[in-house]
Structure formats: C-alpha cells, structure tokens
Length: 144
Image 1 (tube, rainbow, N blue to C red):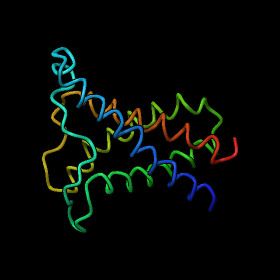
Image 2 (tube, helix red, strand yellow):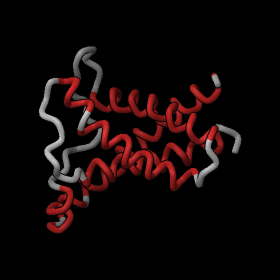
Image 3 (spheres, rainbow, N blue to C red):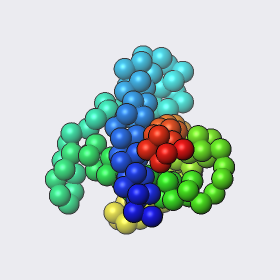
Image 4 (tube, rainbow, N blue to C red):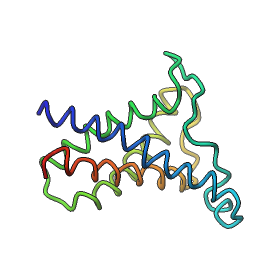
C-alpha cells in the first residue's frame, strides 16, 4: 500500500504539471486565437500560475500539483484493485470526479457560490488530460 501512495502521488503531481497544464498551455496559446474554441471553452488564462494562494502562499500551480498528487493516490488505489482499461478509466475518472468536486465541494468549503448548472467544459478537458497522464505514468511506475 505504501508503494501505491508514493507512486500515485508522484504520478498525479507530474501529470498536473505536464498534462493538465499542457492542455492549459495549448488552449491559451492556440485556442484563444480560434473563435469557435473560445465560444466553447471561454478565454483561457495563462498556464503555470505562479500567484500565491491561501493559506500558505505557495504558487497556484504547485497547489494544483499537490492536489493532483492526492487525487493520483486515489486513482492508483482504484486501478490497483479494479481491473479496468486504465487509460480510459483515468480520463473518465479525472474528467468527472475531479471536475465534480471542483464545482461543488471546493467552492462550498471556500464559502463561494457552488455550481451554477453550466457544464464546465474546460475543467472536463483539463481534468481528463490529468487522468490520462496519471494513468499513463502509473503504468511504468507501478510495474504494469
């Protein structure tokens, strides 16, 4: 179980920096110039946000990577116990579970308005990319 925790955290942390922020990079640098992409995803902010976040003042991207690592532990634990197509499951898990928590629980805990019913396409894309990357990184790290 200890290996699952370490490997899951490392895979989720790295996947946030490479896959999640990679999708943000592509949308920012290319998607913002395409009107149909902007109408679907909205205008995208720059990736790798280094602004300090509460309560510790660490950069936003490091906070995101930390939580990506925590979710990586969850994904690694699930994939360890359940035999499913790991890449497909990673995409679906990332897109649905992480986005659902991001639009419901996180705002509630921060005292912000929760989900307004609009489909968060950008969140589904970013988190699906994270899930794909995490599942991909879990393959060699977990010895699959």
